[in-house]
Length: 64
Image (tube, one colour):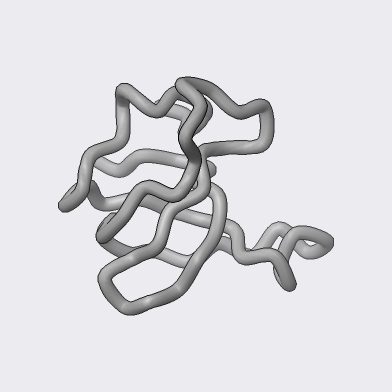
């Protein structure tokens, strides 16, 4: 599942995100969603979240 729709992402969801500094390389960081930072229902580059670890990035994949 991709991370472009806000309705698919809830706090506590396990996701893969790309941080701002990793956008060129595409390096993914795994973590658990703490807060959702994007207000709109969709975003073409992924919904921006803050993981429980404090890392901020855009969701590229939702892990089940």
